[in-house]
Length: 52
Image (cartoon, rainbow, N blue to C red; front, side):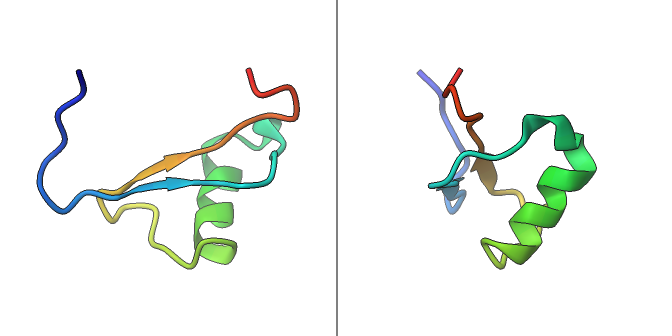
């Protein structure tokens, strides 16, 4: 079981993304698409087109 600190949210991208973007590209997606700060302490989940 994963225990998270109180107040931590988990954000899940609804569209597949290009996982070759690495950390910088995914960080830009967090800011642009989700309107959140990547260093906010929340968790951000991304999936590739194949969902693996």
